[in-house]
Every structure is written in structure tokens, then in C-alpha cells.
Image (tube, rainbow, N blue to C red):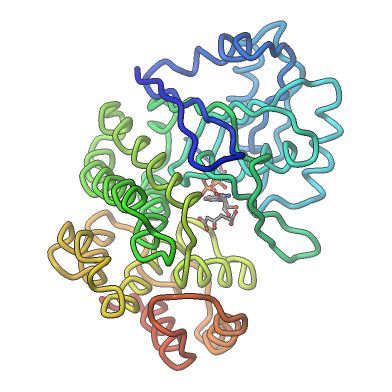
Length: 352
Ligand SMILES: NC(=O)c1ccc[n+]([C@@H]2O[C@H](COP(=O)([O-])OP(=O)(O)OC[C@H]3O[C@@H](n4cnc5c(N)ncnc54)[C@H](O)[C@@H]3O)[C@@H](O)[C@H]2O)c1
Ligand SMILES: O=C(O)CCC(=O)CC(=O)O
């Protein structure tokens, strides 16, 4: 089992990270080390039984369970969770980005410390970023208040992740790292974190798909998730994340699948403008970043086409309009016709 403490910017809290099979059993000792004794345990409805098991594990250190976490952190659910948090002195979140997002939203408003146990590869646990939705509009903020204090990565928790979510969630994590390579504020440390994260998934994902219970490979991919989440939290994102937020927010497309489908296309869009920055990643996928990522995703049976996850072809014009509406930095200029062509290609699932 590995334990380390990391902090990147002045004013941001030091994060305690533990990684290894069996670390799930350490929630109580982590609470004790922080002087905490009344945990609010968070899950989605689908993972309520896992939350119940944690309540039993924590015994007198358990305060209550709230199992209504939902994608994109709707504000009404946060308000209900804050009511359930009354009397608690910490949050224990077990789940993917949705559950961790709810913990962050509560922490933003209450300052309760967070102990998180990720069960997907999305990487939210490693960032000071919170996306939340009010009146159908999703907004993203950055604050040291939302960064979880303790992350417990237990490979046994991702071993139950269904094959499709294993693959799409892994590609979601890789997307953070690919965009970090050409970020305007990239630096030598973020480059190394990003490349190590991409490599961890390039090597580990095929192994966990072939053998979901392979705990060594699950640990390698969880470590990749921490690397990719950490770069997401450290440098700015560009075209790929903006497109995913547009498609997720305005067309209600599922988060991880949308990332998985768009990644080869957004990487290809930027391939020439960021040739030098992307070169080490392209090398990991046979020399072509867009085509190589497409082949990698196809080899893992990832969804490849937006038409297969609910986007209508008639939505592509509006999606392109929305994607170019608010200008943002990207290595290649954001041009409406080129974005429309990218979306067409991603809708059809064509190899870029
Ligand atoms: N703020 C950030 O830094 C950040 C980073 C990445 C993602 N996100 C946010 O996270 C959300 C998406 O998170 P996600 O992709 O992890 O999905 P999720 O948390 O919504 O989980 C998807 C489904 O899989 C289930 N699940 C999770 N782990 C499981 C497991 N091990 N076994 C069986 N079922 C399991 C969940 O209960 C849920 O039903 C989005 O809202 C996204 O915006 C935020
Ligand atoms: O919660 C969000 O949507 C913000 C974090 C983010 O951009 C990561 C992602 O899209 O995977």
C-alpha cells in the first residue's frame, strides 16, 4: 500500500493519498487521525448498498447516509444533502464523479472535510474543481474548499466497474491528460504527470478489460486516474472539455461516453497546431494521435459514434453554434466550419 501527501499551489491544502487493496478498511482510522467522529456517507442510489456497508463498518463513527447523488450535481440535491449533513463533522463519499461532486458541493457550503473513495476513473477526487447545475445550467468553479482532504484508492472498488464504464471512464481520464499536454499553462511537471497517466491507461485498460478482477492492473489504472485528475486540476483545459460540456449540458449526453467518443476527434483537430506537445503521446499510439486513440478505443469496444449515444444528426448545427459561442483558448483557432466537420465525423464514428 502506498501513502503520499501532495500539494501544488500556495493556499491549497495538502492532500493525503493512499492507494492499495484493503484501504477501504482504513476510513475509521483516517477519521480518527483528523479528530473526526460523525461521518455523512454519500453514494448514488445505485451504490446505496455500498454506503450501508460503510455505515456498518464505521459503527459509532457513522452519522447518516445520503444516497441521492446524481450526475452534474443538481443544486436541489445538494440542498437536501446539506440538511442530512446536520450534526455530521465530515463527509465520506464512495462513488464516481457524481458522488464526489456532491461531497465537494457540500464542502463548498459547509467546510466539512472530505474523505473520498473513488469507484470510477473520472479523477474528480484529485481536483479543486466543482461543476454544479442550477436551473438546467451547469457552471464550473475552482476553489481550494472543494479539494478533498483524503483520497483512499482501493482497487477492489473499481473491480466491480462494468466493462463499458471501465473503458469510457478510463478514456475520460486520458482526455484530461491529453489536453494537459497542450495547455497554455503546461509546465514540465504537468507534462510528466500527463504522460505517465496516459501510459498507465494505455497499458492498464486492456488488462482490466480482459480480466476485470486483476487487482494489480486495477491499481495501475487507479494511479493513472490520480495522475490524470491531478493534471486536470493543475492546468487549463481547451476544445475537448468545452465540447464535452456543450454536448453533456445542452443535449444531456452521458459524461464518460461523450469524452470517450470525442477524444480522438478533438486530439486530431489539434494535432498539427500542437504537434510538438502531443508528439510523446502520439508515439504511445503508433504515431498518429487521433487515429491511434480511435484504434485504441475500438480495440476496447468503446462507443465510437455520437449517434449511438442519443445525439440526432439534426442537432449537429446547433452543437457547433454553441461550441463556438463563447471564445476560449485552444492551440488551433476554434472555427465554426471545422468544429461542425469534427462533430460530423464524431457523430458517424469515422476514424480521424
Ligand atoms: N470536478 C471534476 O474535477 C470532475 C472530473 C471528472 C468528472 N466530473 C463529473 O463527474 C460526473 C461523472 O462521473 P463518472 O463518470 O465517474 O460517473 P458517475 O459517478 O455518474 O457514475 C456512473 C454510474 O456508475 C455507477 N458506479 C460508479 N462506480 C461503480 C462501480 N465501481 N461499480 C458499479 N457501478 C458503479 C454509479 O453509481 C452511477 O450509477 C459528471 O458530473 C462530471 O462532470 C467532475
Ligand atoms: O464537473 C465538471 O464537469 C467539471 C470538471 C471537468 O471539466 C471534468 C470533465 O469534464 O471530465
